[in-house]
View 1: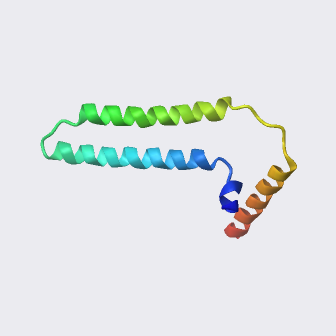
View 2: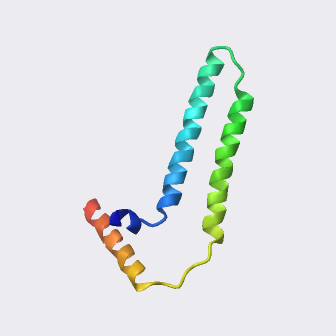
Amino acid sequence: MKKLKNIPHLFAKVTVIYCVAFATFASLCALYIQARGGAPAELLAVILAFFGGELLLLCLKTILKREKPPDAATDAATEEYNDMMMEGLE
């Protein structure tokens, strides 16, 4: 659990992955419906607009958030995470 707390912007990363995965799944379903002779354009537009809006809100939240003053514990945790990631690349 501590490792999850040290990952910066974890909620944003999970939300982006979820939205992209679900939008891809919806697009594949729409292709299947279209191949069987249906017209999924309206349904696909609503689904993609919903997840696109979710990503837009997440983007605005990230851009407009207020920065907290730096905290020594947070800086140490971020530095430890970065060191761990660099060791994994070597």
